Image (cartoon, rainbow, N blue to C red; front, top):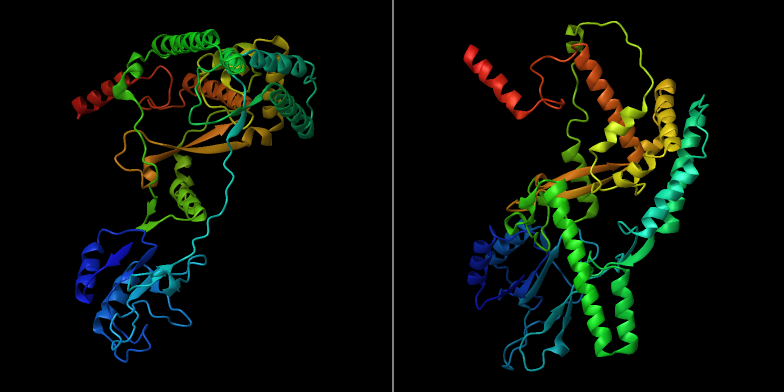
Length: 451
């Protein structure tokens, strides 16, 4: 923020008017036109206006930058008048990088004021512009799936008798997936001109044009681009309209809201300027119930039932659980999507190994660490007027795909068992299959009517 004024009182008045509107002020500098002995050794008086200036600066968490050897900042044209210090620099408190300024009298040329500068360190950060990926519906993706099937079908899971055996098999699965992914994936360059419809044919024709540089090669390239776009977007339209049954997603009025280039997160009236501060706020916001006490005595009111025998998993349970999983879902740390696992599970040997692993998890009472690995992605909630608070964002936890599949099978089994044995109250409608908003409305109207 730069402040220039012809009088000290107008400067203070201007700052007071701006005080309610300024946030995250890092630097305040300018010609404040205030004579004071605090910063000008040639002046022997103290001004009350300086106290107001210090109070305003303190409200912004700023302090006056003092130089060891004070140099005049304003040079008088009259030989009878002495030079003075009128230009001041207020910097952020407790800042290790921006903590001093420099006065340059030799830079003023024809001006009567010297220049004031500060040094702002800029740390060089490497921004990744390349990443490994498997192009969807490509030959490399088919080779990746086929190689995982061939390798994992050879793993013997018929005799998992200990936790170490189970962990070793899970590690074998992780190594197979990781090795196959590294072998068949390729690096792609990420630029602002990256297009999803671009394919190898476009690259070949573009390279051909750059070598030949003829009109015909250019027309061939343009024709390839046009066909690639048409094929890509035709498939997108079919997927949205037929598979996802959401033709409204093709309309402009449901497009994603454009986010601001930068907006600082606010928490309890303070800004999260450092990455560590942002992480602490994120952790506190989404783990607020971690240390709350739990009243376990309510469990004493539940009726006790006789133990049930847990049956072995079947092929139908796994096949049925994965049917409705969307291929477009983001993969976990193993980079394997539901589409890949659907192809792998069609192989009977691989499906048999998955079932043996799931049964071993129950028999041994052990959930492997590979299934617990996750990565959290923070995504913005749509159509928010401002994104300066954490409530405008949603954390998404991505787990490894095989672990999620086994969890889905377990969830299906538990829901079937609890409903079959009347463990769930009739009024419980949320999170259950074959229970809809209509059922909730009927139950609500029944309560109102009986009341």
